[in-house]
View 1 (cartoon, rainbow, N blue to C red):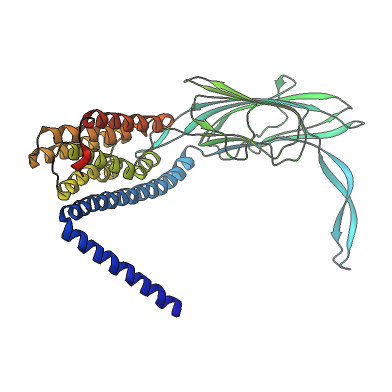
View 2 (cartoon, rainbow, N blue to C red):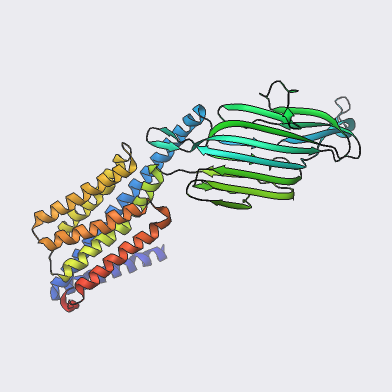
Length: 437
């Protein structure tokens, strides 16, 4: 209680001292206090509009995420979803014991039974070709694709004698229509399995070190991701050779997936290669495909950076007008900031009704037009119109365009800021700043 009272007393003393000093300064230098209040108001206006723009960015991000997720489910139900191709298994049976409870005695007993063991595949060569087939629902786009899967598996009996062995190749999960399923055994069409709806099954007897080759191919369609799931089976992969060729240029390796041995490509297609010997892994081979054109991520990022653009625009005007002795009232700045903010406000709605590029450019044109219209109305001369247009071009147009080239966003923003700084240096180099502030 005593500590709280002392803190409150200290706060009151500081506040009282601040008020007394402010009153004294106002009595001696009223012009100085007015300038401080002017700059404080301009700062507050800029901060408030920056906060509102950020909140709109969060709203757009949330709206986009919900719309994207709900529409993605619909697209995947119609076209196909994330394709997961499980690794085939090559197994044999041997006598073993399992522990089971005796229901009469309640005790656990060792019971003889057949135990299925994984032999592991001696060699596998997989080639996957993925061609983009962009799906669209409303204004949202999704990375749909057509896939051609071809695999050759070499099966080898590594036991000391002849064994009855079983090969099981499951069809992919998450795919849409699966067509053109073809299976070859020792380079001849395989006809022992008349129904591939439950996957490909082969069973036969192999002598010691005898091998057999099985080839499986099919076409499928999906959206988003392709997985070659090797991490679910704890078996040694003796020779792995997986190749994925895709025309999705913007592909990522998901967290936890196996990194390619090599990757190469150009602006038309990418080629990924995984090679390994005597491999035991808990990772899958996986590619996640991304496409441009969805407004959510781009627009929300653009809005998150709005305070920087606002502060640079206002600071640019403030320094120039001060150097040229152009007296703009805080209310003038308020209307200019509002005109600048209209870009974010209008753009947040237009992106829901039209192409993102068109929406952004319309919003930019409207906002810049309003700023220039207001500058002509206040009658402060052509310099204000010129500097407002230049500031809007640098901190609205260049900043906005920068977010459509993610690999160069920071560079373009830096160039725009440097251009503004050099312009102010050149314009104000001969100014005597002594009495300007």
